[in-house]
Length: 147
Image (spheres, rainbow, N blue to C red):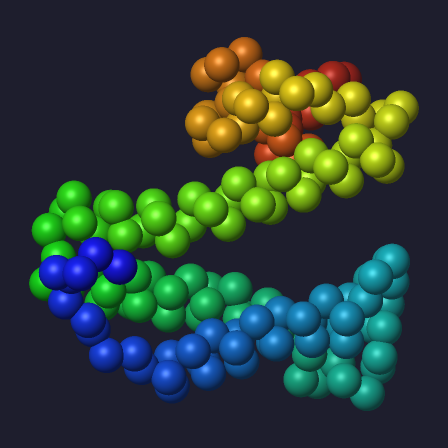
């Protein structure tokens, strides 16, 4: 944080609420649908509670939106943008690099990542540089039946 940026007090209760939201989503995925469950509850006795875990997603984003807006208090737009970028970008680079390394090791023959793709992803908008996003989850599948 820049030395002249005001310090907003941290509200620990909001961190706890975000944790509850995340745990709700985890409970939904592993206690209700379960990996590969084909619509059959993975842990039937958890179904009455776990089936509402999907509500953790919007709750998490609402709380996070408040926290981000709260952190902007007392900052200029430029100061806020610099603070957000310096907090998010290093994590993005780290995760993108881990994805690149994992795809290099375990991706072939389905995925063939290149150094050019990795470098283009540093600029966040890799398709603007003629390269796909590093994470296949962001790639658009084009083929029969897909638009």
